[in-house]
Image (cartoon, rainbow, N blue to C red):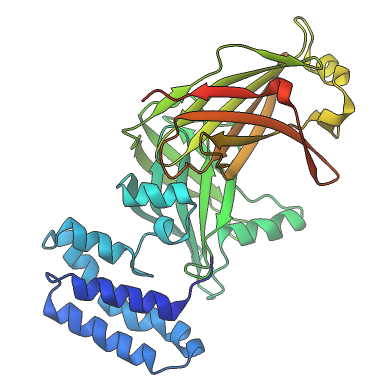
Length: 359
């Protein structure tokens, strides 16, 4: 994500000026900071922004925590770069919505080993996915994010990863994704996983292994489902085509995430190896079923994908897909499967599903 710093400063200044209850001392310090930054070239602005605002940030955070300002003022301050939520400034549209609706948790946990500090600052759990902000800071000042370090580790054949435990049980069957936040927080990543079957409240243990540090970084975080509005749909019948038996096990809608779980099997009695061998080659990549899906609302809008994972067990392939929510809750959902052929989408109408969303 790339910031237009001038635009951000002007927007933040306007928000502060509109908030009459901000103490005069803080207002004066902010105005002084803006004036200094406006008189510096763009490159110097970026270099000086963090240092100049640190004192202001500390003061503002104390005031936010004291409860002396209104919720409207607190929300305005959250939108200011550096002060604000990383979810709000650098997350996908679902995380931005979650932040605006108060669905996120401020964690503020840090662990330091050998001059390297890992911090978890924000977390969102809506029953469909867990997303958290992970920040890595090093004594040498290089401050590579965990995602950057992981890319180097894989290139060198080394292990660098994260394990998750819910109430002491490892979530071993669920992969996770890491996305860079961008210029606003270059040493931060948003880590996301989409486990099934978790309760609304549980203790999450996060164990992070950094290839540059001998000891693991361990976080213990109490987690609670923050989605008050949660709709779960599923297909009412199986779709069959070219020996592919497809079912939408669940389609879950929250303000932050749309999650779809697809189950695929072959003929009754077929194991996975036999089933995959029997499927026509246009549905496979490297001998694995590779069907993708468009998720469309009644307005014809196509949801943006934010992650997917698949696994096989016994005779069933199970795929979990996550999408950004639509701007408004849909009245219906169309799931349109397709395969890629030389860059073109070849749709499979025989496996298309249409789900109505109850009001």
